[in-house]
Amino acid sequence: MAEPKAQTHIQQLGFFDNDLNSSTHDNIMLWLQKNIDQVLNSLYYTPIERWEVERMVNSTKEELQRLLPPMIQQLKWSGNKLEEHQKLIDSLQNWTGKEILEQAIERPLITSHSVKWEMTVEREGRRVGDKYTLGFIDMHVAFSYMGYMIKGIPIGSNQKKEIEEYSLPYLFSYFNDDEVFFEVKTKIPSVGALLRQINFYKSYKPGKYVVVCPDDRHKELLASQNVGFVKAFAL
Image (cartoon, rainbow, N blue to C red; front, side):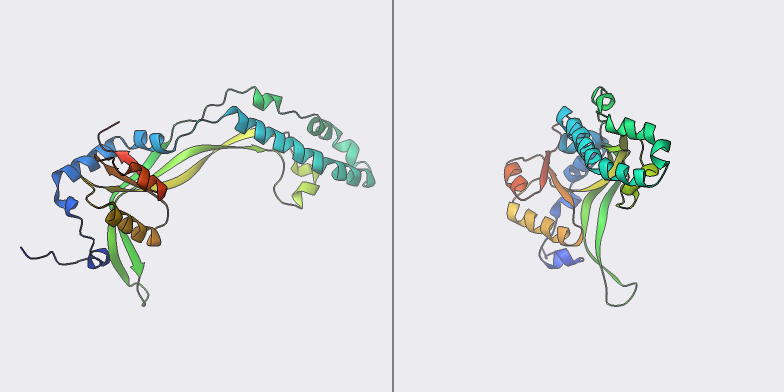
């Protein structure tokens, strides 16, 4: 039987993915999409720990202790401005973070918001608008997870000198957006070839890469190369 003709750059380099025409490959892809939120949480979810909250509170207290004295001195020189903001200044000086420390904070689970099969990896050509297909990543997933920070102290150096920019510190939650690339395999005959393929994709699309396969013999080796692993059909 004749060798298949290379159609993408990665195939020209010798990476032919025979899995693509396999029904097992499709079944793993379907399983992955169906269970994607559970997979993401098994890979990346971490509950917020008490020490993390304490660290944020202590850091905020230390910054207030550093910023307030010179600002108060400046306000004393500016007439009745100190008296005008005395209540806020007292609250900031006496702030302990107790209200935050007493909160029961539970980080919500990670949620996906976009799943794309066979994402094209492309590079720009020499002429504007030219693009060349290098290969295809089996699945791209965009997801969000909750982050936390304490707000109340202004960010800019100039704003930190202005009492009007301050408020009593409070815990603020926000969503971080992230993405991950999945490479699905029905088997791994050569882990070296798999890593060359992933490293090739990484050179054009940096980020998190995870292999999904029923065979987990190479899980630790992949982890040592900063590549995640999920055992297919095992959740």
